[in-house]
Image (cartoon, rainbow, N blue to C red):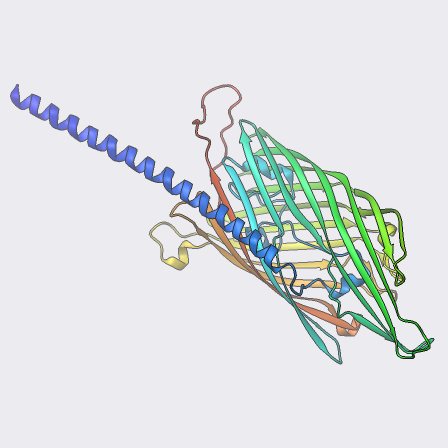
Length: 450
């Protein structure tokens, strides 16, 4: 009996130790998740600070945008940008994407995402070349899940309207003069999105999009002859408006995931103030528009750890004549992105094999044609990888690089070579209250994918 009691006490002590170790592991895992989420939030805050610090510096807006409203920026997350800029079909468990609101249906943690992109652009023609650099924070997004519903919101920089003051043109009539043109400004979209999980593999989403922005343009004419008076005119726009988006995310089986979204035309109104060389001010109403856009794509996983993605997007610029460049016209623009992702390493794999590796390609039409009717196109090669933060998968750091060319000397008179390097941040933390299971209304979701 004494032996039996001794054995019982020993088993009890072992159970207590085992339970204690299990609880300790859970506490350490929770702490690691909190540290990782904090690291991602801190990184996003530092990126925002860098963006504000870099604002007065030279920027890298496309020289092609001098004849259009601006340059459309990518809505893709760090993972999507490494895969050719794909967004609509790329479901993710932690990265918050508000391009397709239905993708929020995959989010299970209270999550936040951001990115910081450094760009170097070189414009060249047959006579000269010029290089510009820029740093930008294209988006800050967050998502909050609640049973079948997931709420999302964020701030997205949709268009960079900057044109360097060094942009100039020379003319010999009616008297020799130089025209200098510069533009500052940005166009932002603030989506308030909601996704609902219809089934474990099917989500529908919609968002109300609030647009706002400003444009500040300066045109200076310097005549060589003193008989002609130089002029300096400044035009400033302040505007805001609304739009909307709907989307779908569906995985018919474990090997295929489909995604599509439609964004309605964004309409913005405001005031335009013009100040002349003599200090005369005039204000009048102004209207700006952003085109309707439709996007669809697929993610295919032919075998475990290997994925291929494809997306086609059509921006319906044609007919948006309110902002049409002089002597040219807006045209519908098609964007195609594709990529492959390899993620076959396990916990015991080497350092290189533990990383997911991505490679992609992106081709796009510019949204207006030159007066001669020659199209402007761009191509970009992308690559990237990811690393977990805090020793867990509650937060990730994405690295990506892009290299490409826009326009051509033969067709457009000059071309731009583009190099971008970016960091993406994503972090999530579970609700304190554990998820209730086995009750009506719960949905069993597919496994996490990072």
